[in-house]
Length: 80
Length: 346
Image 1 (cartoon, each protein chain N blue to C red):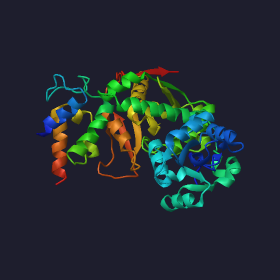
Image 2: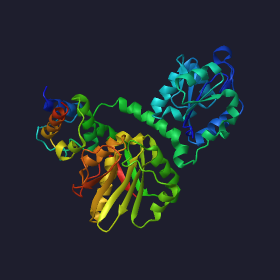
Image 3: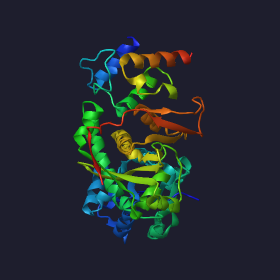
């Protein structure tokens, strides 16, 4: 399963994956709020065994599945 | 100095009551016990049980005496009492160095002392002195201390419902019927305010503590806005659980302190309070900034700020711990309050 699919799985597990495309605006679409985003950060760190750097945590980086996957990939690379 | 006791764990046989339940069934409460329990409860000290007995028989006896409601997470069975105490501490989310244990048997006290040296152990013969012991006298008895047990009991009910709920966390939150009331801090709140600043570690934006006098001065200060948040839901009150301290200048509103009790960790209160502050700044047409100090335990607060649209300004991104970070709000002033709670401004 690639990174994006795993992230979509997380949304599904929270009953939130209807009509979710990789570039859907998650904040505008009501898929995510800061409470959910917080769970998301912890989920990503756990699932991908990464530590997300402070500078990666922003509204912009958590706006779409694509941008979240970007955070994961950058964190994976810097961890190596 | 040793910390004040937050939870006292009772043995039953020959401690809470005279006699051994398994042997002589008709045990009697020791003299004055009910009044002692009531007074400890009033002081906000939680009461629990670690007893080797048949669970149902012992609970039935407590009900018969009309004192069952005073005990939270009672551990009655055949396991080790040190394990029981650890279990209670984990359930309450309180550290064991604020626990005391009272038992008539030296061997039980020794076992607890050996495994958990930070727990205060008390010989049951001393029970009449409990109320006079220094560590059992809180500095203040606030409205919240008096309600503490009831709040934990409501929490227990919430947890049961939450663990059986299938669906997203927001959907769950929406079923709670939460009401968050935000009001200016009043003089009568100061003791609770101090308690919150001292007790709160994880959900605290700076970890800075203020003296009682300083806190009092913020109430009357013309360039400070000092707010306290109270939460309740359909299960009952959580009490006063959040604080916001704002400093206002000509063109800027600065969040000096934002904190919430850990008991509301998963309730989305931080976001709701930030929406309120964002709106205040927008109404006043002021730049919104926040002080953040990494205390090593408060990352959740940092993430909350960042995901609400705050960005770091003028600090080294790579700096770790201790230093003050200034966060500037760059989002829109039109944030909506979360839909899962009712926000009331007083």
